[in-house]
Length: 358
Image 1 (tube, rainbow, N blue to C red):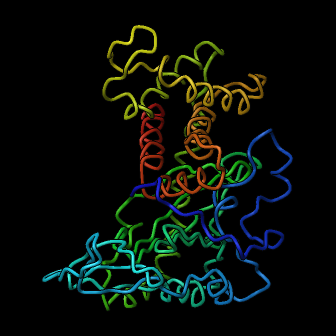
Image 2: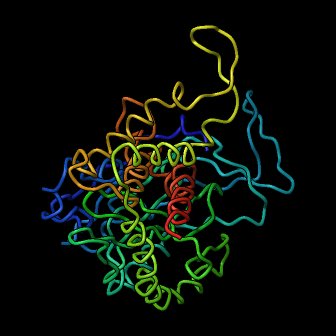
Image 3: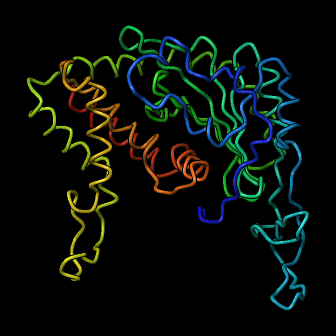
């Protein structure tokens, strides 16, 4: 995806006072953490006092803004026929958004709406986020009764995110993500095979949704496995600040290793050199250290691996991405957390932290 071309999301329908995802009051008062997620900034929250369908309708999520044509237009406005493909164009402007094979079918968002309507006893709709000229959608909801504590007053909630696009950018996909409630950190996508449901855009998509109730039931049971892993991190403690900071820096380099690939022009020597963690990722390292100080209350609390893990994934959930436009930054982070590099880094560092528990 070319993130520079993303439009600002439609935030015309929002009802924060009734949003199920807003962090519970007892967690708001704890620590000096960011208390909202990226969806609070760039998405449309669901008002629990109105119907699910009304929220989908008012956000424009049920109206495909695209159409398919068997041609594209060149710079002179002439139509060029596509033999084995079709162009997906903006219905209002006619501007092409993508070119797909003739067998491709636009999958509208009606099945997503029905998933939440038909599974209301198991799923609580939280946010609808539209971007890329409303051609792509993320819909998220909490799985009811899928919330457990790692330590006292530190609950984790498992959430379901459904992704779809009209342009072929994404397959219709369900992603499961565990979130820490008082700082809304993403703790990793649930990637085991039993936790995956992914479909191509085809007429049979609705058949797969019939498996969802049993799938959600399994998630409540599987959350216990995730909590056990996080508790194992709590049990790995460090003797002092110096030892903890040394381990944190090693983990930081591992998490951000993809950003250290390649060469960069040195600001002082003007010569090309290999990327260096201290020189080139100083902002990221500063964010991680500050997050860790908050986790340990400036080391008044004995440092442990779970605090390190949260300092690291907080940087990816809330700090990654440098732009003055908060909505655009949160939009890019949200996409990267669910479907890209930020999520990959959190998944990687979770594995690295778990390796230290064994």
